[in-house]
Length: 495
Image 1 (cartoon, rainbow, N blue to C red):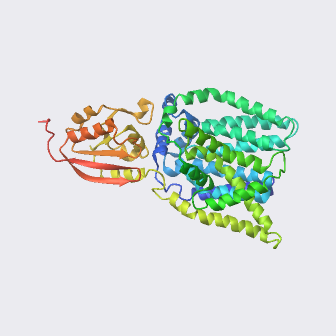
Image 2 (cartoon, one colour):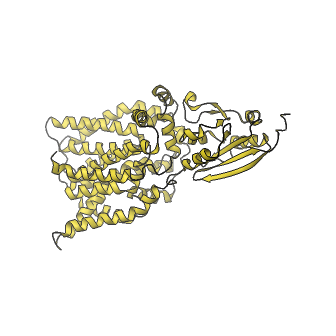
Image 3 (tube, rainbow, N blue to C red):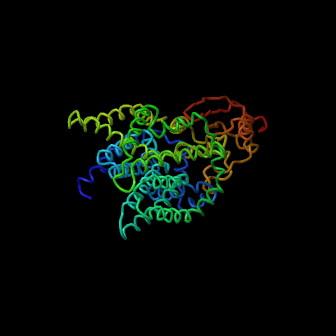
């Protein structure tokens, strides 16, 4: 690749890297990131045992992250940096695909739209696999486009690479297998696909599917992990559109550009057009997941379709290029001015989202606030009772703070239990353990699915039964609360 050709993907990658690095360590870890801290912080053998019971769908991500954690630790910035790098790679790939299908300006604009997307930043700055899923989806789409344009013996290598990339993207996120039918739609919509292309795609995608069957079957056995997912509502549809467009602030501008790009991108420069590639990629996976979730067991979450955001960027980039071309009759210099103005407008509309994403409480849980309370106010010998196993899971985000406390409700620790919650003692066993304790912290969380759950209520009741106590303070933070109880007298049965 010449320096001139490298400039477009390099500019997109550098923009994504710059946006992703700024404030990467600002937001607190949240519940899902606490799972990454817990699992990747274990020796590899202990980590592998987890997948027999749960999180098999994230196994590849954890395996990728394990050596990184050994080298760089589990701080917020360190654990999120791989996501930033993956997002930079995805932005470069979007730029290359856009350039190949719609021209240099469309490719550059698409890469920059993706780099500046608030949705992309949220997932770049998160220690979860979704940035890597998006990067793998971009790679798979690029390999498909190259395979369609390739000739002779080189074609087979592009198709082989495409099949391998489908395996990788699906191992990162099984829902991303919906990229395959989206690619099939792209082929069907193409008016100039090479002879035999559909057959070669079926062979490549089918081979990947065969390899994925054992993984899919094993992952299905762990579907209890997503039993908490809610059924989608009509409002979910619009929120999905906002998510794909980069948030509520730029949504209308991005949609307008995407529609313009879809119209302008129908002309194919090679075997397939930008519209044929991007529209099914953007639309089909979310629609399938939403429909299935509406008529059967819910299986939709916004982050599960994050790998479709690059498709929106491709369409918006093509829209920026078309808008710039419409300005050409005014003056030759109007082309870059119009393109620059459109990109600046999108950037300006995205500023509130970027600012909100970088606040300490910019994620669903502000677990750093809880940890800071413990660091400042806990004493040696303090006990803690997590009202449910998911609350202990949350505390794994900051083991240096919560590790100081005696977890009196714990029967088997998460490592020995090969999970991320551990195993709790029966509530009745808490009373004798707390009878001679002078201070106990009780921690609750938004992630307790049913606050009226009998087991949760019994734990709280057993803490109170071990009193008398006074509440020395209650601290609320985003995602939960903690109360410190201090003994005010002898436990009545301890004399």
